[in-house]
Image (cartoon, rainbow, N blue to C red; front, side, top):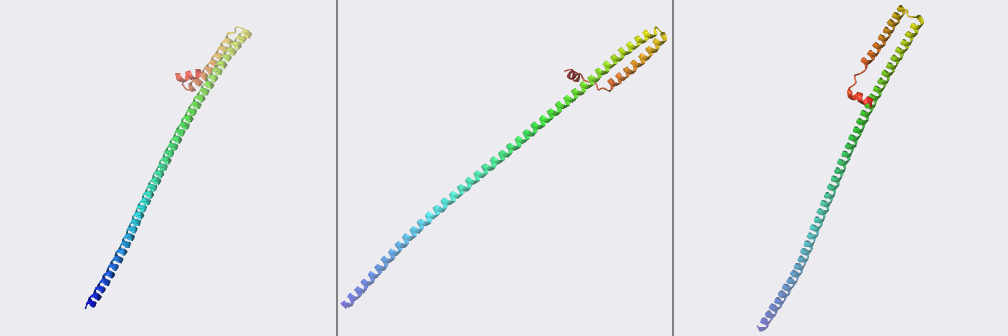
Length: 191
């Protein structure tokens, strides 16, 4: 019996050793698994941090690109507005210059017309004076040549009156056809 007790004690002891060894192996495997799990968790955390950092970097790059694009668009819009304003100013300046040139041309044409008209009137007056002088000379010559014949003198006077009346009518009609000058345009033409 004692051999049986010893044998059962040995079996029990052997089984306990196996159980302890099995338990130790399980603890070792659990520790290895736990270490692997911790390493995996650390890697996963690191990857998560890396993904988050990459995402932040991507968002910042996108925001920077968006800001740069917006700034470029603003600059382009400002340039376009400035170009349009410059073109409008140039257009207005050219229009003012053209209007000024047109006004000056009209003034020059009006002055030229007035000067020509005055010159024509002066020529007509000079021709009228010359004609009167010629008629006086002719009358005086006629009186000298034909003596004091009354009838001849009367004929000459009638002829002279008619001639003067005709010239006077011509001058009056030319004055009537001339436009009436205002005092400001008279002063301009005199200058």
